[in-house]
Length: 308
Image 1 (cartoon, rainbow, N blue to C red):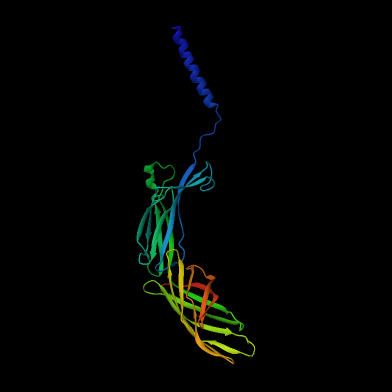
Image 2 (cartoon, rainbow, N blue to C red):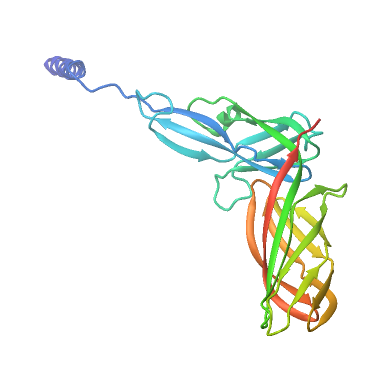
């Protein structure tokens, strides 16, 4: 019986000691971080009819420290495997009507952005609603606030056209110091039903010569045509080819008279559908059977016409 009494006293002492230590503890309560998710979507750049548009969307997890304001501090990281849908309000302007993608799919090292591709069908303004199905990730064991997220992006499709300017110069070797120049200013290129771009301009010429001994003369070159053809690729790069017709050439001088033609070589130039591009490219000139080196300065200026 004495042994039993001792045992009860020992157990009570142990329990009392444990309770006493818990009551006296000053350790703060454990506070878990706040976990939330957002949907990030890229913006749409200037879009021409017939061109493709690629947009990206990503689900981003935010871990805020305890007692911190939402989205202040903490750690950001992208999340994979989230279904994201993109629905176009007016598929006649921009198609297709709906696209579904999953973040991280088709990439070697997920998570990664989901990529959506659309095509501009006609001028106008529409919107795309992106929806990330985050609530459904509860079944995958995601912690934190799990609520679907929507983001709207406006897209403006334009009937694009361009103004092209070209200015060419050549120096003809020889004692006469002949310099030839020609150019055209702001020739419009418009879209054809097939989706390419075309335009035509007049090449205006000029020339200067110097006297050689007792010989002097005048060099004249008549107006000629320049045909422009072009395309816009999916990245918005405008490629223009300029083809020059031959121009009549005549030299009237005290020592000689000559009639022939002047023909500049064709040019291939590139620019952007979203900004003015200027540059210089080599260009040769065949005149009187002689090939002369020179160069051409160019500019491509994007223009557009809104629907209606």
